[in-house]
Length: 135
Image (cartoon, rainbow, N blue to C red; front, side, top):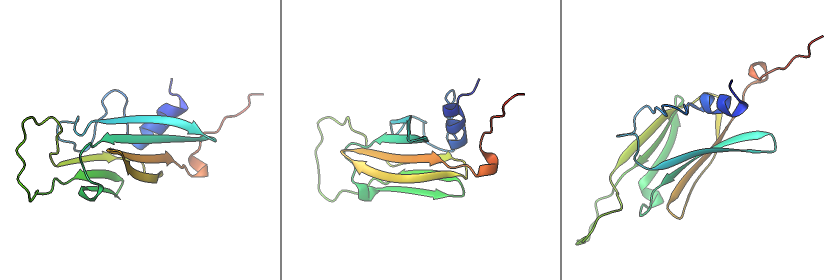
């Protein structure tokens, strides 16, 4: 049985079992969490990308033709750095997800190395769930 949260996640294009994206490299980079919470009768979904060491100027978030795209472009550094260990990846990436046409992107923020995209589903009245009383 689908819960309301399942319906919202499905509409956003998030499948709990496969988490398929249009394109995302190996599907695991960049590391990300997808979570939901209900605030004042609105089911929000948030995607948090772990982008430690990135600058917000090197990240692009777009929505076009129902495809949400997050791109990280690793700029060419001008100074020579001799790494002893490289554990924080800064490889360029493209993460794309097809989302429902009624999804509203409420905010995009980059704080302390976490890129957060917050959205919710705003269905037209004729598409909203209706419950009928049984006589």
